[in-house]
Image (tube, rainbow, N blue to C red):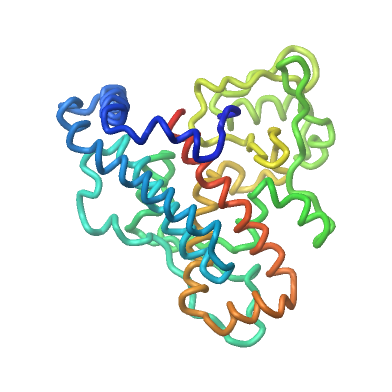
Length: 313
């Protein structure tokens, strides 16, 4: 996990074609890709420009009115994700099929539409399944659906808002003592597990990133093997690690993909659902507005953080 992240200033090293070429060459060697020298030369400017364009979208989003933010943030994140893919696939984009979004939204019901109950459906081809497989080695099933509420519950920085609006907590903080971490015992009740079973469960789910010490729920976290898939999340606002209180099927769903799906749907709403989008941003009738507004404030900072974490991992 990248504790020394300093917003866009941390990206300064990448705005040098010479550095990008060396960076890509080292990655291509690591993945045993043929002709790493030549391919890193061919891709260094594309890589640099993906990052630069992504940064410009985010900077414009920060200064834009709320109604435009989802569109700018979505395309900013798409550019940053493409830079990540180029570090492991020098031929990207090899076919036009990978250029689609990879997800779709349902046609909206005009009456009583609620963002929380809306859903996105995974497609066979496009950036979403491609990123999922290439970056996180996870295969998404075509036709699977996920609701906006499920996605919002996977954002650590929204925990306080869920407590205020829904009277439920979505994450528990991890305590840190002298470089060691400790999981609060209340998690045993949430997971319906004994201490030993929890230790075994988290060790396996973390891919051995988490190593428990002999006594209690104290553990060490090996950042060297961090892959972007971990039960541990990092709350960028409180600057501490947290653990989800739900251990169901989305337990290991990468946070970067959560941001992609939420921004995809919000950008579609901002473009094509003008009446509803204007109403929600002006009238603020229900819980949708505070969650959408807060998420957009969070993703403005968290998106680039998650990408930087991946690039430096």
